[in-house]
Amino acid sequence: MVLTRLSAFIMPLPVFGWQAIPVRIKVAVTVLLAVFFSAIMPVHTDPKQVTMLYAILLMANEATYGLALGLIVITVFSVVKLSGRLVERQMGLVMAQVIDPLSGETARPLSSLLEMIFIILFLSADGHHLFMLIISRSYEVFPAGTSPTIPVLANGVINAGSVMFVAALRLAAPMMGAFLLLMVVLAILARIVPEINILFISLPLRVGLGLFMMAIFLPFINGFVSEFAELMGKLLPL
Image (cartoon, rainbow, N blue to C red; front, side):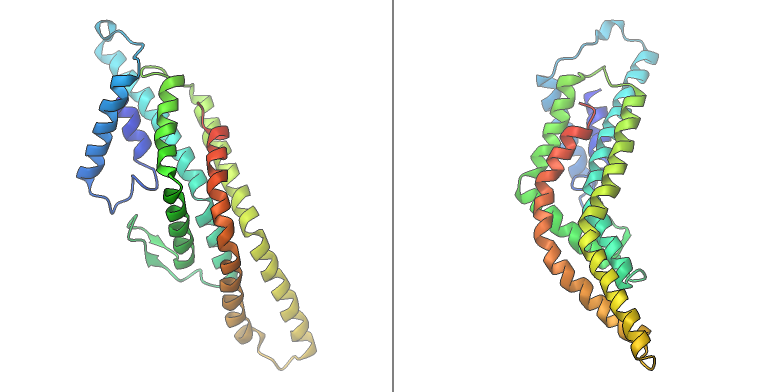
């Protein structure tokens, strides 16, 4: 049961679940953590009274709980990447796509760069210890063999999605405001000088403004690292 919850929790995580990490290392880390937690965490289930069907139900509950925790973490973790995608749309870089070497999926260059910077800052602040603290806290509140109800887990995932969109819009709001101001200036310029090809001029201006605002935006990513830990304490069903 401990291994099931840990596996479901680690599978969607942004660091431990990367495709670039070999499967053998993932399995070894998961088994090692399962042995550690099973040795220190109490189990409130008598093995002699567990039938085969009951064991399957217990493992299903553990997998559901672990997966819900992982989904909440990865949803809030995607705030910086989502804000980068909002800015890329304003810059006109929607069609620019690259292969993310970590996840193996198609991604956009600017959002991937912001995500990598956030991950570096997150790991430098010992953020990976927060993942272990989350799973340790889950075993203290809900030992192996117990788990929250499905409505509680679903509510946590839904709230995490709402927080992701609100936080991403809050981070991207200054940059989107700058693009709105640029569009107003270009519209006034088009009325004053109709001979100017506004579409031809707007493309480099939008890219240049986006890169400039992104350079100003980078210090705020470090502030979101500490906010990430606070959001985990509010959203996780622990």
